[in-house]
Image 1 (cartoon, one colour):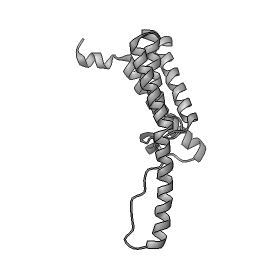
Image 2: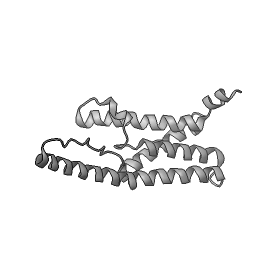
Image 3: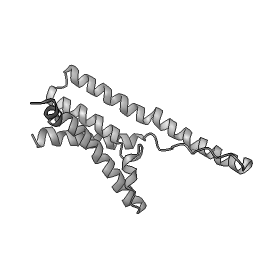
Image 4: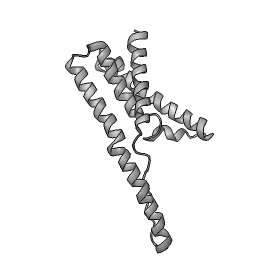
Length: 153
């Protein structure tokens, strides 16, 4: 088997990628359902429901758990990585999004006062996730891994 064939046959990698992609598709469909607007560009953005990062890392950790067992060093690495990513999504990145929202409000207030020559670019607000968004992303990842490693063989 060539290196390229080995990469293409890596079920752990592709399960994680498909879980992340599935979460992004669900995000676009939820926006369509809730807002009534078709916004496919949201599939390329971070933040929102569900967390595709959480889906990806939980699919990877679950796939490793199902094939290598819970007491393996590889599972310990995958689970630690997943916990760090999911913690960061609700902590640092979520706080950064809240700060960006406040800074954007301050910029708008300053625009009203300064008027000329003051045109900073607004900051991205939707950077992180709520606990629910991370939880749902994690569930999607676990289900994707069980589908790939238990039910599909």
